[in-house]
Length: 445
Ligand code: NDP
Image (cartoon, rainbow, N blue to C red; front, side, top):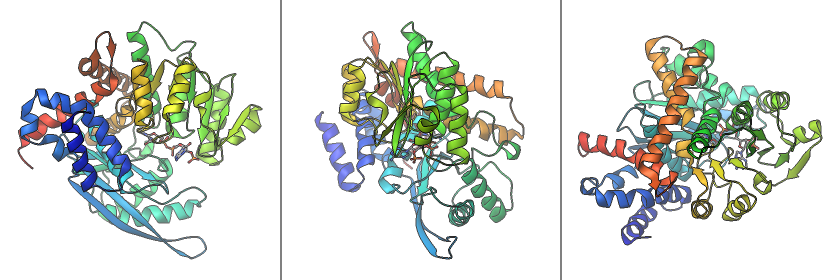
């Protein structure tokens, strides 16, 4: 690592102690972008990267609520408004007990680059709470969401900050949040994305992240003269992103053989076909059960406490959470013949794992490029809300495919490395340039 990156990172660590995921996300970007900044001193002079690692605003608030047994519970709420250089803050809300400031700052930082790559006018933000929806009744989730929005509503708006879902925040939670916002503001606006279809949502939004990660994989394969047809794929997670990744990969002729949750993974060598996937949708989105029940139902292997990465596959789609692929996992994937990774999750690969993929010239698309389809369709939802009309499924899907194609092209443009493509550099530099140029145009603010 060169001296300027070392001293830059020392300052970031000193200023943001105990935020290890944030340090990790910033360091990955700095390694790609600092050499580019050296060649383009106007960014250096305006201290663009130093400004980008400082959130424009951090909001931290108390979220008190009453559980079903009448006990008062207290959670912490956050919204990180990271950058509004190219549009209103935009990024999801995560409800998970692991949520803390460092995790949300890493996600908000990544979001700035990702949103820039989509070609749409969206700044970057992220928020959430350490609330755990698992095991809570619908009424408890509703009371929590109402309390959360009772503070958040004063900081967001359709032209200011537009949150969406993330881990633990799906259609149910967005509904409760939107209901409370509407009541407090007395206005019906596109202040959240991921809304229900009959009250302002966009077709293809639920599918967008998983479909997008698959389209990205398809683009990478096409550049190599290959296709998804016949590829054996390992998918982690079993939530929104994992479900629609399996759906699209299967549609394109690939075979997904794994899924997981925080308790373990399943291995189904026969492939997760449409009928089995319908079971997963019901299990995870309605019954809110554990993935083990898939193995019980379809008589396949359940691997308690294990991730899917030792299963032999051609392509891997990490779609659960951050740092779920270690260097060891990466080595195992490569050893077993995996040649493509498309990250549905945010930062699922540890830095040493990324090194393994890059050294082995694997087709490796980092989350900020591969999973940008979700926020892209959120941007399309905002556009439809602004026009007060709805596009058809085909129209949204076509736009999503166009956006993923354009993200791939940007990665190739900025990441070309001899006869291969370094998608990490491509995504980081490609995402950086648009935001940095907007910051130069807008002065020191
Ligand atoms: P969901 O809540 O729908 O699903 C998350 C899945 O990951 C669940 O199967 C969950 O298992 C598993 N998981 C969560 N935390 C952990 C953990 N610490 N260890 C192991 N497994 C875990 O979330 P999404 O599918 O929406 O999000 C998945 C990833 O994709 C996240 O990284 C998110 O930031 C990213 N992403 C999502 C987008 C979207 O549009 N939804 C957009 C872009 C990125 P369990 O049920 O046991 O908790």
